[in-house]
Length: 448
Image (cartoon, rainbow, N blue to C red):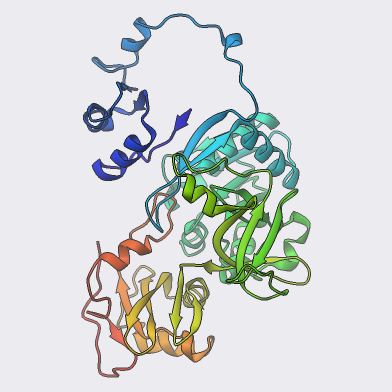
């Protein structure tokens, strides 16, 4: 089986995955060779470390000299045989290894190709391959006779150069990528391309029309998870009328979606509840975690922990994580909803909302603000931000605390790492603006 590890992982996180998965062979670039060799020595079973630079003592020629020929025909497998373990990002706890079977991959490829049929596409992905999506995109391209252009990391300045140079016809984007592209200065090649669509996780509703109008192709929202694969996607033929709606599409082919309340009862249309999924892209369980598997897969339904709502036309809307909410005076406030409003301000590049403990109300809303380049807090004071939110949100959803940032800690998938934000200081009320203390000031901005 294949186990993927973030190449930027260090002693703590890489060590956890290695101890949990107990690999027999580690393949790495030379920069991580010493770290992995040291960690491999602490494993209970022997583990061969192979670096890709070809140098002794762990370069590729070394194991090649000691290898023996083998017959691929003897390596028969069944559809339900396990092929890979992909670890969840760990933003809500310790990473869990998701077991993937051959059938999971085959059915996921089939589902995705039925939603966006294409011929010999040339896709462009900047996602890291230690997550499942880029591997799925590669398999889709191989299945359809297409090809995949892979970048080591996402770069706004190089993005359109790569799209133009390699004649890309479709792009895949996640998290903050569309925001950064939409707010970047015009690029001479941003319309000189053959891209006919983008598949994007979390297309920002407030920037959707800008993305389409500026770059000249539809941005199809895609919702999924490591455990359940693709769950929803915006149908191509419905894209134009749904621009800016914030919808993540409709359930994918053969995917069953239930939305339930806290006691497991199905909610009515347009009511918010937890997404429960059953479909072809399901994982086979968490590696060595039977209790967690049983909790997540109850009666065959995967409990996602995501809050969604579905309208009368079956369009689904992502409302945030079940644990990514602020519980203020008995009201559940979706962090994603407040963040969407904040990003509508042209001076704000990105925003992150977290709960702050409060003795009276249980929790209060705090917003971390990342301003666009060349804008400083004095040009967009917190009072203006709060006033803008007050005109778009119910009063109890308006952030009480506001703190400016020069950057955000991010997960490898470019999502804001809110757990790290909340762990940066013991009192999240310190060094930030407080709406209930009119004379409070913001002394500079924090950074990592």
